[in-house]
Image 1: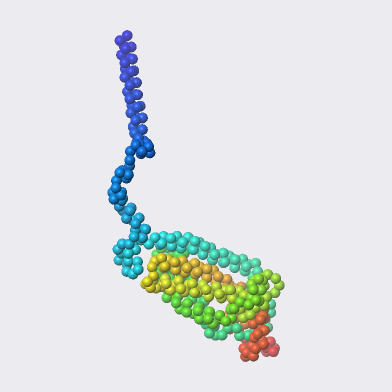
Image 2: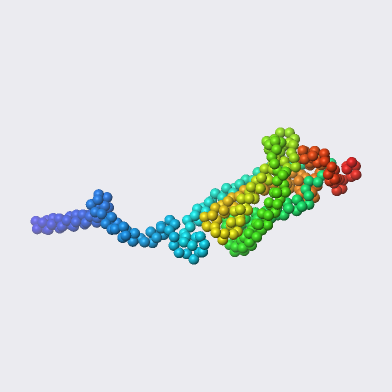
Length: 357
């Protein structure tokens, strides 16, 4: 009996210990929730509610300070000029997001689409060949016009290559050249781009002024555009000295040149009392316009070289075959033939004497 009594007491103490441990564990797990429950039910107040506004600001003074700085509060910096008191210019993050996002993506995509379209056109339709050559030529470009054209064209190609390097260099050139190679190229490309920009702008606007009188849109230019220069329908539509497509390209270059020149001027001379927000705005204009102009100029380069027979030889020698004039610029050809210019009807080099009669 005594052994049973001892055993039952031992079991009772074991139950008490287990229950005590279980209750203790439950209390230990429940205790962290009491503060949350008390706060949610309003039984106690938070430390922030009990402190004054001054003490509230002192809880995390650095966070409050940088929040105020990012909000535009003025401070001291070593920068001279209009932005002496600007500690953080938040617009830089927005500018970087736009430059590396929409402008780079859509601008680069547009250039690739144009290249693919030109390649597809050349594979499917090939070169737009002359229907006939007469062996007689007419003067289309003066020596000065040709010099200015090639000066502007070569300058634009150099500016386009260096500009694309600065926009897409990190993504395209670093994997190819490495960081050191790209750094060396960028150190060369940046000053070339800067120093060539103003001479290019001067040449471009001189060329635009020379040809502005010949680029007014006429009724027959809209007919040319409707037929896409003869791509739709039969034969080539009538055109003057410049056809409808060339006139559209002229005005795109004219307006794009203004945008590039104005924006580039402010980027070249940042000390002209210009704040960083203005610089970021002009950079967006410059980059987006430049990418658009490169894409449009690719079409002009293609049509003026391998895309259309007779165009390139005219810009090299200044003379075009009468067959080219009749086919692509019939109204201008009729005007030339009706005038008394001595260059009219000149025999092409190597043409027989019979061809000149």
